[in-house]
Length: 390
Ligand SMILES: Cc1cc2nc3c(=O)[nH]c(=O)nc-3n(C[C@H](O)[C@H](O)[C@H](O)COP(=O)(O)OP(=O)(O)OC[C@H]3O[C@@H](n4cnc5c(N)ncnc54)[C@H](O)[C@@H]3O)c2cc1C
Image (cartoon, rainbow, N blue to C red; front, side, top):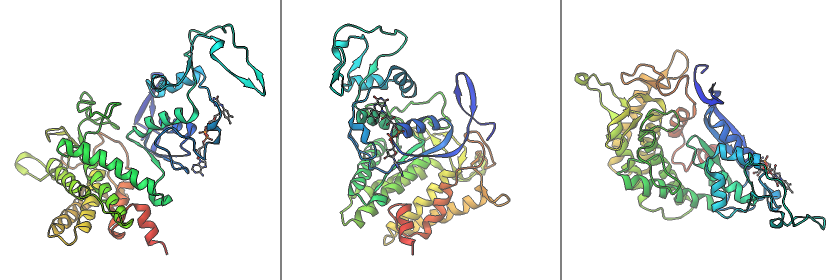
């Protein structure tokens, strides 16, 4: 871990600090902490008590949001450094901005004492302007930027709160990612998008093995999204809502695509060992052929879930066979019996390597893959834990 360089601060490389950071509270402080931590931790999880609104809206946890707020120039500079272009987004979205010191544009009244509304105050040319978005408007912009970071997750969900709105949101997100973006691209899910949610297929072409934002298709994510779609389907059935047929159809198609593009059979003539490549391009050619442990663990979890969901169909047998095969593959190559852990990464010959990541892996992918077969059909791991609880 000590040799891993996560980010550059003022030109000085800074070592990665760890694998998972957890932030409590998804307001301004928590969101900005998550943004900074995302450069130094493999994953960052933000836990929030409130249901977070899609739109700029006041909420219980931030009562001061109803008061007038100003974003002072230095705060604006820092925000724009962390989220390039965010000040412009605020202005385009309608936030007033004060950049000429003209007091006639301000109406401020403290306990009935009004601030002078004529003349000008000196303007510091080095400072950016003072922006005056409402507190919820600012927070919603920051939240949207944070939600777009691939290694940050904000937790506030249906299984915890029982609030139907979260289930509908999960369906809506799955519909966009799986039914629209993945299906629309032959189930080779684009990973990167511009601000209008248009896929950017050549993103990071020049650094395809980027640790956080690799170029191309990430096979493990095809598997993971297939399973998430099935969890949403289970949650809808539990709520007595007829699930759309595409949830299962697309999950199967994602699984098939991941196997077809990503699973390499052993082939002695081509000096090829069996295993999942990490990423491919959009024509199914391997880009990073190293094997990351989390890809096979996601494949194990998805094969198991599919077998369970279609248990009455002949196809269930095939999913079970993939499950057995990948469990065996993981045991043979990834499980490090000597040290009681997993090897994070193997090279294309299935020897330990560290081209993408160094050090031991975050435990949750392996843990989930081993746990899932003991839980039965679940809508999430929280759901499984609740059902098993005495
Ligand atoms: C009247 C007023 C005017 C202000 N004006 C300005 C201004 O003009 N400019 C300015 O920059 N600042 C202003 N501030 C200050 C600014 O509002 C705060 O500094 C800022 O909101 C602090 O952000 P925070 O993320 O630290 O905390 P908060 O915004 O208070 O957020 C705390 C978060 O933690 C969550 N939470 C709480 N308990 C739990 C739990 N157990 N588990 C999970 N989540 C939890 C809450 O739901 C909430 O999302 C003003 C404050 C007030 C009161």
